[in-house]
Length: 210
Image 1 (cartoon, helix red, strand yellow):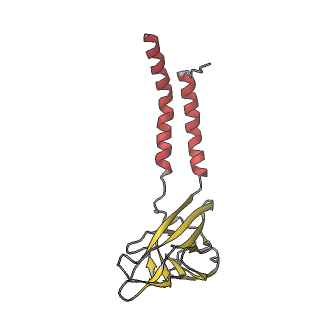
Image 2 (image 1 turned 180 degrees about the vertical axis):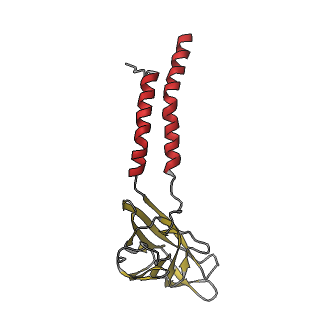
Image 3 (image 1 turned 90 degrees about the vertical axis):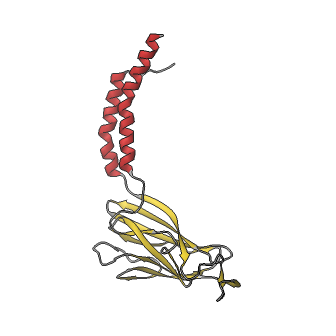
């Protein structure tokens, strides 16, 4: 049995859903994750290998964010000699830093996990055990009241960094980190709902001609 939606009924449903949209948008909390590449900042030869940092930003309550990072060292990562050629010595990562202004109110609201320290220009972790090739660190986290903005991550001893040649990571700031825009999604959905009754009316008119 086919169910046909009357234009007036569809319009009423659309209006009801539109009325509920602002409430749903207001209750949405940020939950983003991804992976950023940190480039070797001292060597530009093809043998140099980047590392990656997995990250997540979870808003556990309005304006209460948990920032987490994990260092990943690729398999086969080895030290390079003075000529930029690979050796047989495995390369390790023993520290990670994320840079942002921690003196801003609410920038860091909890003690970072692990062997860590908070300086004026960011949060630093000492990785123990060190992260060897084909291994990853534990998740390194802290809380903040500030939404994510693009920031620089760096790791030692290579060193590796987001700039130049790598990718930014989210850090507490003004909230301009590239995340999906929910406003555009809601606008598109609202437009579709408004078109529902007109589409039903057009189908009815077309079927009556035949």
